[in-house]
Length: 446
Image (spheres, helix red, strand yellow):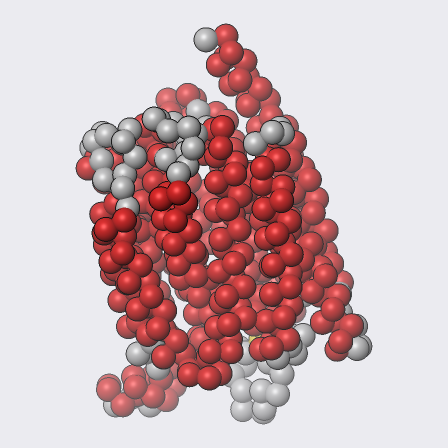
């Protein structure tokens, strides 16, 4: 590494690609689910499957693209061209609908619904393929390439805030846009923005001067070698903590907006306000403490983050009153606490992972990161969450007598179980602390 600061150019690249990428992920993780639920079929099983398969594709894509970006010594092309194609696939997603399928293939309505669901799940996988190539593999490796431990916490705090800003834009503004222009126009507009971002990247992105061509396609399995795990115990323990934390998030996150609209009965404006206030306050709080992260023991901070996030999730479980206004306000307060813990946890844990990721192997290790942060959480989390929803079997409000028997909505217990799983990270933190302490002692001795 040749720089001692991140630099203005890099901050702009981080803000542009980080935010646009997170907006795209937020739409996929939240509004694609709502799109399926509202316009194709109110079937949470289909939503769960879409999330799970997306996690599989994201992991495989990141493993391959991360290794290739190391082999070619090029993050720029994977980022820029990945965003260009990613945007096109998002725009094409807006063309999917039951009526179009029914007309194109001359199908009865029930069969058309099934075929459209299959097309939506397949389309989501294609989008994830290019999104993970551009964002999860290339962008994350680019950030690691261009940061040092001395200012990585500050950069990571901004990286952790971007998903929340994206969530604010998506949960609030996109809900209003859907009502105004519909899903199809919305996906066309979003796809255009993502593609434009990729085109801009062809001119503004520069790879780190220290990035070199290294490795072969055999390095896809590099991060799973016992010798690599043994050489980097702190990294893999941090990834284990990240995995448990990720499972907790995926238990409730795919169903959050659907829960607020159906179970709590919030309108688009109401859940937009709840999200907006909670996210803005959480983001501001995170930016305030961002500089502190670099000056404190990051592993100790994980205890605080787990406690805050769990408290917020418990609040979201309990905050239900006969008064709609009381529920709205209390759920917003609990949501703020949860989000504050969520972004604090993400920032601290993300900084630890980057601290102990060997810079020369950053690309091929992004796939390993995806195993722990995306694949396992997106397979187990929605599975647990939907099992809870199925067990409670809360009927779809105002569904009518002819509603599908599989129509059920998210249950509040998803927040309770997510809180319990979040607290399970506490059992792993002491092991991480011991490993980090040993690594520091070894570094000082050298």
